[in-house]
Length: 66
Image (cartoon, rainbow, N blue to C red):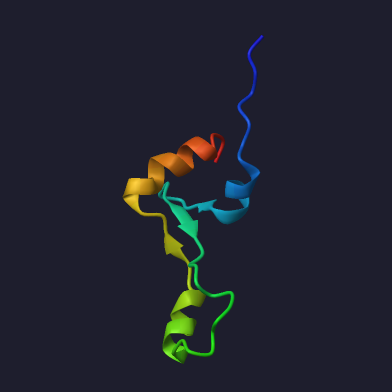
């Protein structure tokens, strides 16, 4: 009997796969202590970015069906 692999649900909520096979993620440092951060910096933190190539394999292992 072949068992299905389980997806890490925490990772599934944080990463989305792009058409080119990369993973999109949200930036950190945007939840508190915002008063001393510059408006331009806070604006930039809203944008999504891609998972770095050194972490790509780790994300793939957490999301086997992504």
